[in-house]
Image (tube, rainbow, N blue to C red; front, side, top):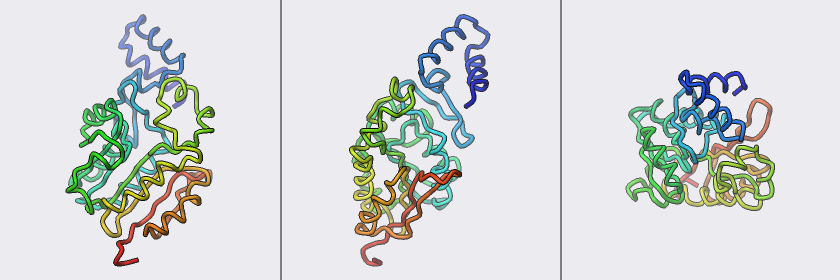
Length: 243
């Protein structure tokens, strides 16, 4: 968002109160994320509530959300891991009102925010809090899980470093620790020919190719942005009978 748009958001949020506007501007100048200040943001053209302390959805994750929409059958089932505000889950449920969308997050504040956004959300680590009735039922598993290499955390933007928890970013030495956990655990919940969509970057897609092949994932597509940078991976899980 350009500074002019941020200023407009703050002016609207201040509702004509000059003192309040001054206080809001001061908060933003410290690096506090704008959505924490205004309490909302646009994600895939949907208004998303954003509570203070909850991971703020990033613009690059919108492409993953749009792809998840195309991969999910209208009456299918999707699981959104590390949901944060519930933004991706909300996009999916808006596009497919006949589908069942469930989400998880380890942060209680995130779960409260996702619930306020109308998402069916469960608190816990990755797949752990999900009902067992969902095993083998998911058409899509999607996640923006932590994937920043530990050594690269210091390179994050100021607002991320100063306000958001490192737990939202830290993916271990090469950034693939949690990505690998999702790869290993997703087959328990995916239907045969179900789709796994994960945001990642750099050389991580190549680093995970062997794991994906060993676990029965096929038709792996590396997702690139308009500048040719790696942004995610799309992989189809085949059942043991079909591999």
